[in-house]
Length: 316
Image 1 (cartoon, rainbow, N blue to C red):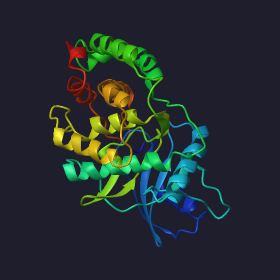
Image 2 (cartoon, one colour):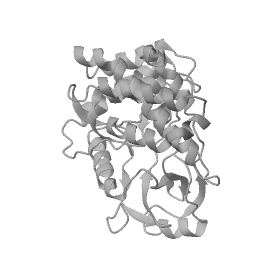
Image 3 (tube, rainbow, N blue to C red):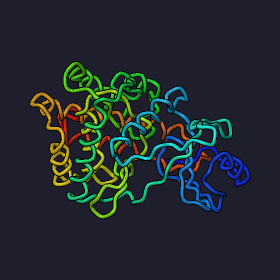
């Protein structure tokens, strides 16, 4: 979550007047995340999230995302469906951006997950994959393996402004991971593709919400688990790896959906791909985020460092 587009209190009040959600009491921009503009809204009837879609989220993809949330919510998953206005319309426009009012879910995201919390998150991811098995829509992974080389080329030699020699190091690792990528094998399903701890809401060791489905797509389920593993089992700098947290995440997932022998063998490459995907997207954001955006930039090197835990020979 973040704020790129600023919305006045008057515009927010006029927007809410389309809904049966009460009158605006307060609004606060949410700085976490990097993709969309988000506001926490309190009204006379409750609390809501307002999202304005920017950057990588195409307006044409929104019906897919909202249909997925409705599907998952209908199967008991703790996800936040969008709210329709009095005319039955969920996708609106505000300040020239597509916008949705989204149901608020209780809970907090954890910064230093414990094994018990990772176990619960793994269970939730496995349950999500099972709930999505019969979701009829398909969407290509806009940040999947096919996008990494073009993104690397767009970043170009500017990568060396982040760290000397980073361009050549990423290029060499990317070549090897893409050559080994297990794209034709493994079970494909609807995946979250971004299940970081800040996209999981918790109360104690209980998951109360899974949020931010705007990278959701059809791809390898083991890749989704690999993304989560790289996000949950390291500290924010990427220097400290907590194997107990990673193992708990895997165990929790396995309670709902055990990996095949092929998926287990491919897991280090899938995780290495996740490391490269987030290194590159963070590098692009680091180099191109507007100076006046209310957004917390994330260090690309914090993901680059994780690579050594999965395919150390790529850094040799």
